[in-house]
Each structure stands twice: as C-alpha cells, then as structure tokens.
Length: 249
Image 1: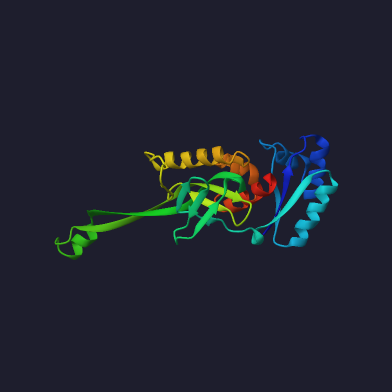
Image 2: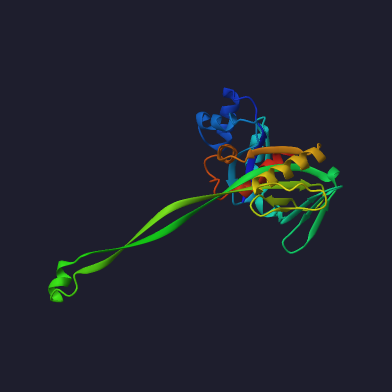
C-alpha cells in the first residue's frame, strides 16, 4: 500500500479546499474536512496499490501548494517489540528472545504513544430444558422434556497501549504496556502496569528532551482524524504510526 498524506495543513480556506478537492476528485466540501483536523497534520488523503498513482497525486498536491508525502508501507520497518526496559546511562530494550538494543539518550528522536484496537467476536452457548409434548406422546410419558441450545455472538473490543521509540539507527522499538517488564538497579517499583508504563514514558521524555513526543494516536478520535474515512483504525494502526512518523520527521 502506498499512502498519500499531507505533512502539514494549510488554512481551511475555500481556495485550498477547492485545490484539494480537484486533486482528489471530490467536492470542495468533502476536501475541507481533511483540512480542519486538530493538530495541524499529518493527515491521510488517499491510498493506492500502485506507486505510480500515489506519485501522480503527490505531484498534483505539491502543484496545488500543499506539503504532501508518500509512505510505502512495504518499506516501513516493523518495530522490534521490547519485553524488558532498563533506563540508566542509556536506554536498554530487551526482546523476548534476549536480543538487546542499547540506545544512547542522544539518539532517541521520536516517541509515539498509541492505542491499538482489536475487534473480535465472542460466542456463548446456553442450554435450556423445556416440556416437549411430542416426546411425551412418542415415549408414552417417559420423556417429557428436551434440551435446546441457543448460541449468541457479540462483538468485542480489546485496547492495548504501546510506546513506539524511534532512534537514529535501527528499526523503531515498541514497548507494550501489557507485557513490558521494568527493572534493574535503582529502578523504582511501580504498583501497576499502567503506572510502570507511565513512568517509562516520563523517564524517556526527561532523559531525551530532544525527542518529539506525540500521543494523538492514544485515542480513537486521533486515529480517525489522521486516517480519514477509508482506513479503519482497527486494522490500520501501523499506517497511522508510519504517517505520523513521516510527518514529524
């Protein structure tokens, strides 16, 4: 997938709305909705399977006075998931397999806090026993009841928080709130996983003040605003993270 986004947003004036609408092939009214996103961008305006189509739209947007970019999702490095975090003279992230990524504080460039949404289904079965006149008749009164099973399905949503750490060298590092272990000499013990996660973020921000911090993807509203109507947040958190990183780079 090749995602076209506006890195920054111009004023939501009629001229820009008309120019964006002309480039996207939509009405100026529809285009204006992509120019009034809180935070000033980036925002996704289109996605294509072919790179040529994305490049053509990028050129049209640039000619219209916008600041566009194209993110090739196939080229975006997958984050390395850290199981253990140690914060001392530098940040050390250890994977479940034991691979250690030591990152000097000066090399931390971007901290993105995001919440993933996993939608699924949960099925429950309930069995009841009731009177059956036909069974009673056939069996001569020996079998009076029968079992009936009812199956119900309901939708579920599971939310999971992550911190994505971008560095100067190597792929980004993902710190999952639900799984991370935080220990080491001098590391204060926190009462809950949420408190541990919040402390890791606070410590990283304090030790790497040059790093940009952004938490707009922590909320569903932020995901919807960045992705627009065509890319559901339940399945495109990776796109939102890649576009946001490109826009803040």
